[in-house]
Length: 453
Ligand code: HEM
Image (spheres, rainbow, N blue to C red):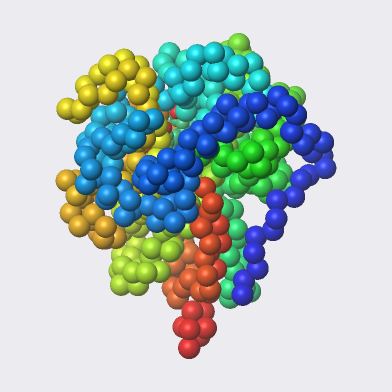
């Protein structure tokens, strides 16, 4: 059997001794997750499907049958706490509407929201805590996005193709002597982390540590974390923030040609606070690898179940770009997001009340039969695969979409060129996250014909 990925190890250089179990952090957890967790578990016990999808691996390990059940119940489904949709047109319209916010304002009653603001620890801010770009509205959102989007133009990304190819080649060279390995920890995770670390000026010997923190913090996108999950994630985030202070100081002293050095020297960014700089930098860093790893892993698992399509792609390498779109459609690495109505509104023919939260199931909308013929079929030649909303839509449309597309296309094409007989062997394990969907462990053999015999 291939070996498992190495466990998360704390670098003594950046480690903090905090165990994060103070009364203050317990209150912060109770408000951000504890109350929600109680509600979700109760509702799941009553058979509420959206709560089951949020809490029960029997549902979220394979969410697609549940999405179809939601679809059969209507374009918007409500459980008294939140609404949800798997309708492509409605999801798209909500994501693009300025009548909605991605900020969780209104999730808690006013006084509790205030209390949360007071007990929140700036050193453990996650990608879904303000001032993260993901959860702020214009004009603040426009400002943050403008500061970093220059690095992600299609032209700039196109110029990174050789670098991405070099990383893929080098990772596969290192695996030459290993007929079986864990595709996730040895390849799918390594490629995006190397690319984004390059873009943000992170030295080689700090990348595996950053990957470890990212893996531990990824769970913070999920609702209703347990106290233990929250503490583990908050500890990783605290260490990551401490490391990021050190990284920014280093770039201030000796700027490179990386994105963060550019932001630090940009007069327009001169008045950004420490929290804002951290929110922008750590979001780009984390989003840069915590999602693409899932895209590559999901693709390998899907292609393993469709050897005819894999063979077609090996004969027709120009087809890889569309195959990547089809993977994003049929098994979206980011399964859902949430929006809150700012006022009573009507969107795509549906009424949503002021303050109402809507779970936008991207993975469900991507299988809407009104848009995709035979939506559950995986078809790398599907003509409209790119109509998926796996990268969201509207102002929060994924900043790194072009980079993710490039990385996945190069990673997969190179992998199957080098190892045409690559097969999944052993028993893969899913990541425990619910918003992010992917594999934690995906054992593969490059000599599958031999090992299958
Ligand atoms: C397969 C890979 C990826 C997927 C599926 C993905 C998906 C998404 C989705 C769904 C959102 C929007 C969430 C919402 O609307 O609430 C988003 C936003 C974002 N993504 Fe990605 N992403 C991927 C890769 C990347 C990469 C490689 C980067 C950076 C290099 C990146 C950076 C960002 C940033 C900064 C945002 C926030 C944009 C904003 O709020 O304006 N993502 N991503």
